[in-house]
Length: 84
Length: 408
Image (cartoon, rainbow over all chains, first blue to last red):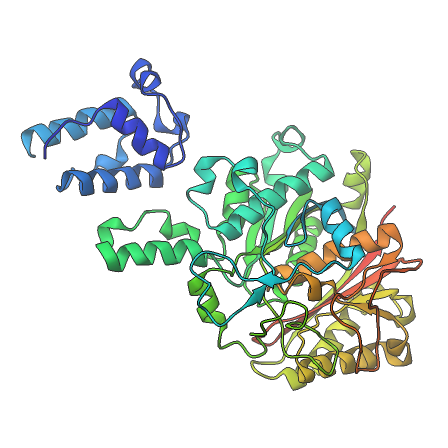
């Protein structure tokens, strides 16, 4: 599977970390820090792990250091598309 | 405790009530809420009776992002801390100018067993990639202190006492020391949630754990039917402050932390725990500058085995002399269960409420006392109360005593 990560899926993953956010809000301010949404570093680490399990492949090791949803989406989708 | 440290807020999450008022109403009525264990996955285990916290909806009190990363024992702590802050009327606006002036100290003995079990099951059913990252923080004793600190922005001295059940009293001494050293306020207390399958299995080998089937008979300390204790969950958190600071901001002083002392007598030595407990009582009285006859009520540890109860009765007689046979003794936990480190925290809450109301709450399910103690049974006893003594012993050998005086 190499289907792209969408804002809808990211919002659903954030919900599992206890953060309720509308995908349209993520779309309107993709460069707001995860911190501002209330997601901490362990929360993002959990999202990376869940995505890796769902896609059945590893993401770049620095994926959990992304600061914003936009940065995370770009990194994950670039990785999924190129297989890098 | 030379400059006085006072209690200005109490938050309770107990099997017999959420909130200090509900807790006190049930406690002074002598209501026993011990019941069959109904927590998920525990039905087949040999522990039959416990004190479960049933009237508590964590989602109504704590944000999801804190709930998903914490165990039930921390849910209890976060909620109890909020209730204590609310009671003390101490809000973020009061300390955000100096967040280093307020700290947190809790005691814990059971940790996050439910959360830990779930993640370990993911580990052996699906593999390490399926263990959530919050496992790294949720099941440790320190989780509640850390999460309260983070959630409320408290950057003062933060710690956790891992010293057995009696650590629930030692935490007050740590908080009082922080106040003496200049902290303005401390959140202090203990909560537990040991009623999960993994946690219960750990307790099955505990000396004195009662596996009785009948909620009215499973925990009857100080009687010749004593067959051990039943465990419980929940606990209490308190706001304590320097007395002058508290009065300056117009807070109500609910009680004074007057004296504390602790001793250690080793594991599986309930017979000698009495000697250690007597030393602790004497130390606490000394710090409080309190004569034995000034103690108006004793909140007993009440382990509920014949040897442990005899050791406690001997300790009271040893430390308080002939007066030890006359002082009213109560153990409300016989109606709620023994919440490990949180047991003496709940007893301290009950002691403060007893001082305020002039009422000694009774010892539920206890009728014929077989020790030379004036155990208050049946119904509550009205009395003029100025000073209370709270006792606690841990299964690993810690003993502690706390003297609490009436506020105002």
